[in-house]
Image (tube, helix red, strand yellow):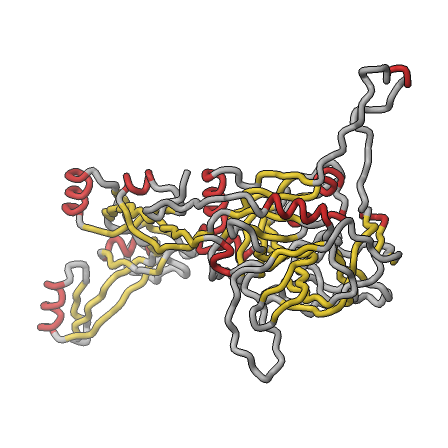
Length: 513
């Protein structure tokens, strides 16, 4: 059992200070530390709103967290010495799975993803699992999935922390569980000691979406939970508009009449629309004062029609701007005069009425985590060399850049824990146990399950993925490591496993303030 020891109050200046009656023994630091994630209903409600807004958009856009997963300079040493007798807590929530002749591994439904927001505002995820506890409300994961470890002494709990068992592409089949309190080892909380890279997080009852409901403005204002306003618009007559606004006081908008605008041929906004004019207006536009040839490029032109006398007289009556004459050859000719122009279209006045529609998204209490998905058992001070299943959502690439996993679905590795411990001075790792396997980041925080029953999908959590290693230097992860679960781990687990959390959804589908 390793402990990091530092002077509690500075160096002793003189041994004479330890006079009779003043001598004493320094208090040892506790094994455990607790930190609030969402300490009250108002904070938990804020977290739910954050992740569920716009159809779980934040969950869908979250990315896998790649911590410094590949510890450098792995060395192996002697075997780990337990600090007490082995012990175990039974799992809960047995699943009935019909055995088949095909040897498949039935993935437990109590594994899932933990989500959070880091210091930079990025939404991240990693792996975790539901574990047995008195109030069926406990999640186990890696401590580095709970603390934002920017540097030793600078660790702080992550924001918007939730656990989603069975998560799949924005779907939350068993609900969203907001973290309430993180229970970790004192040495990780204070010194970021990765030999204690595990955490037990109590969570509130889960939250389901209970559907969308249109409500009144007053109901909207008083509701706590996801909500939004949609503004509907419609074009109406002037009379309808005046009635809507003047009688009811509702909102509206008048778009003023816009007159057509004459423009030139180079204005792309305009449309070519020649205008019929009188003969005098034509002569002026054509640049001539009498019968003569129209100048090249003039913004005017004529149109002639040969007709009978009767047709010409009738046409002249209907079109006052035309000019009718009888030629020397006896033909009657109708002449119409035009000027070229380009017009930007105008519009009549528009009357728009507006109607704000208020919507709320009701929430539904999903119940306790362990009641919905069960909880793996817990074991400590176990002998090494036993077979375990390691579950998680790998997503990150291998050191050589190859990326065989998507992080969409959980994967597993099976192997025996190492008889020797693994050491990496860079992260103060002196006592990790390892399993040969090729999982990648994203799987960190996933449970190591001892004595896994494939039919019941249950066993005993005896570690969580902390680090990944490339032992032979070929650019591929071939080692997964975990802190050893000893008596101090069990002490922290037992404290966390006996703390109640509560629910955050009210009887009317509202989230508690």
